[in-house]
Image (cartoon, rainbow, N blue to C red):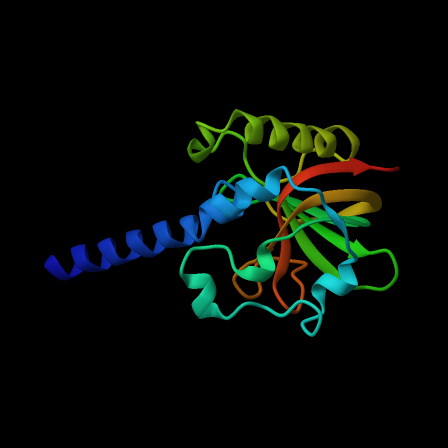
Length: 189
């Protein structure tokens, strides 16, 4: 019986860690994220962000500290095509965004504005609600798993650079870069 309790406690701990992996950074409530929230965005391309030689993945050791790595201290605007959408277990909208020219993709995520961590951040809640509304209205509310869209949609996305765990979901880039959180999105078609 004692052995079963140890296994249960270990699994519960791992589940909690998976759900909270760098969560403050992902929703931009860390100190650097709050500064980036109001910063001016730089124009960027999916190809440039997703190439490791242009935007190297921070060492896992650096990311495991739970803080924002140096090459995550950027607010960017990209233009691309949303090819797939889904809603993750944590409530985030998972968007697969393809480059305008080529097949390179990356993930862009819009956090759940109802997450308890955002309780003292009404500006973030409003930002994420507005971004999700744009997706819901012009593309359709994402399903509970990531699915390819019948037609791709051209979008302009502004958000903060984030490097997630390797191979995080469908559409990840080779260097694990994401736009997380998405601060604004405009569907152009």
